[in-house]
Length: 220
Image (cartoon, rainbow, N blue to C red; front, side):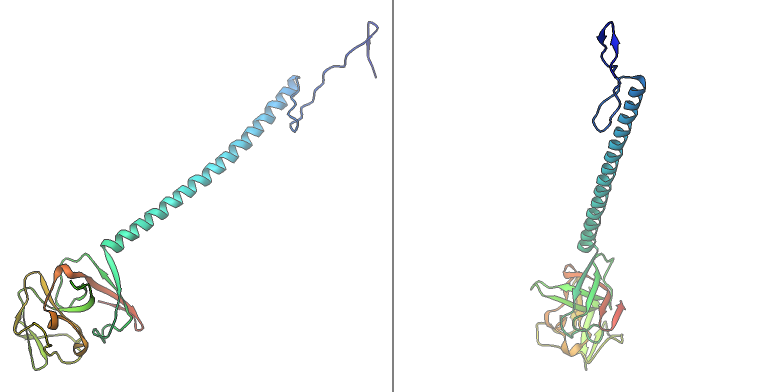
């Protein structure tokens, strides 16, 4: 219906309702209160969304940083602490078999007699051999037996007899300073210090600690 005032049609009273979808705000106190609550709800939703996004982003950054640190640590460990090689041949049989994977430590206080070593010769060839004599030791071969300082080699790892090989080594042989005399456990199938003499300690890549192969795990 229409309202008449002084003979004229009175304009309708403003009664704007709050409509969040349309963004219309009521001019009444109650409407303004509803508007403020609606705005607060919208802002809260936006804040929650931003918080969720920020949390996901920082979680991703933390996980990414952790992954980078793990990779860097692994690189440093394998570069300076441990290494691995694959046995090629039967010169260390029966201790090690062809295809076995060996793990060695690069940081060692000192090489000892009986240690199995990973070596890199000046020729660029890689070997796995056993240390039998250290600096100052005198090595001799007689009747298929290896002697160190006049004592026969002790160890149940020896396979076969130990004879001199054609090379530049003459016996008795004194191991030079900072060197080590190495041989393979399978004496008849090994190219070792009987051919090329003692090797320098700088050519020792590490001391074997573990091997993995067809026979399972083996510690040294």
